[in-house]
Amino acid sequence: MPFVEIAGFREGNARAWVLTIVRHTAYSWLGKNRPATLVVNDDVEGVEGAEITSGDAEAETEMIAKADAARLQAAIQKLPPPFRETLVLRDLHGLDYRQIAKVTGVPIGTVMSRLARARRRLMTTIARDENDATA
Image (cartoon, rainbow, N blue to C red):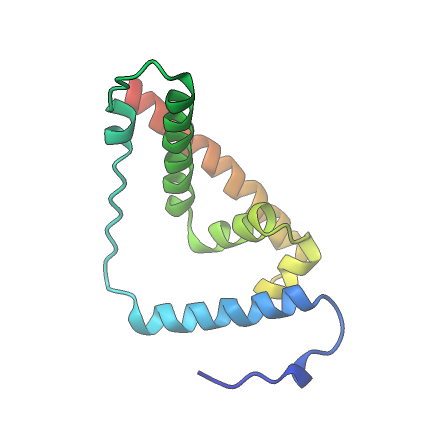
């Protein structure tokens, strides 16, 4: 892994600079270590189908929240990497469009369109999964 010097930071947002380094490092590592095929096995049905033996509403609420979080996580994982990356940087890390553009090395317009498409695909995937579950 190449050595990164703090002197390489010029001006701007230090967080975006660090996330750029993390992004490049992660993609380098994935390129070397990722298996040819990935298998994701989330047992969402097992969580959803589990019986609640106690009448505890808090436990039921927690179980529903976990199932929803697992469903959301699975839907995010289905997004193509550029869309997933943009969505995570914006909605989980709170970066603005300019910072995301700097981290990912794409124009701000591309960031905006990727984010819109990622959110649209995410909603479509979740809706489709819910329809499949009820059918």
